[in-house]
Length: 148
Image 1 (cartoon, rainbow, N blue to C red):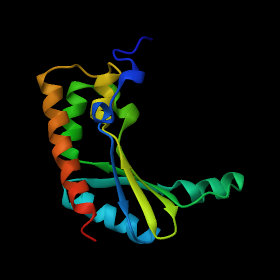
Image 2 (image 1 turned 135 degrees about the horizontal axis):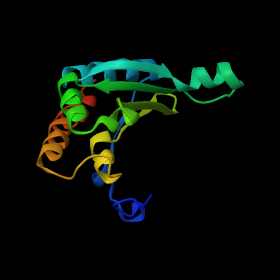
Image 3 (image 1 turned 90 degrees about the vertical axis):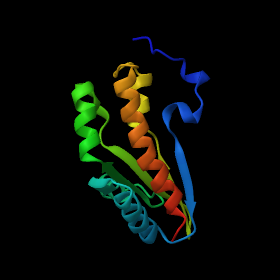
Image 4 (image 1 turned 180 degrees about the vertical axis):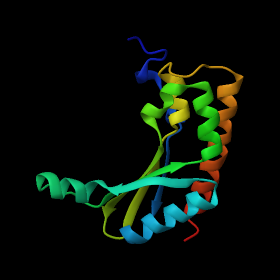
């Protein structure tokens, strides 16, 4: 399969990469991130600690690493109307990992932009509107992450 865009030529904005640093403990950062995304219009459909799961399954000793599967139901419904394959990369994950004690990184990339880059979704006005809508929600959330 040939990708529509050469990954080597991508800018983080092309796939909607967002990052923030939170100067707080890991559990506090998870709760804060969950609340900020909720306030911005997302629900958390699924969440789990990757580090705890790996410790349990393969005795891995990994720094705290947590995934929040965020979803805005109205946008998800619109997106699935346009691209049924999108479920393969849903929900929109927000990752919180501990870089060092008291310092957490929050990371997100836009599955809507990724779907377009991979050729899963059409590069048309309807899909751009979905990208713009989710982008506004994510921008709001990241703008409020540092309000702890």
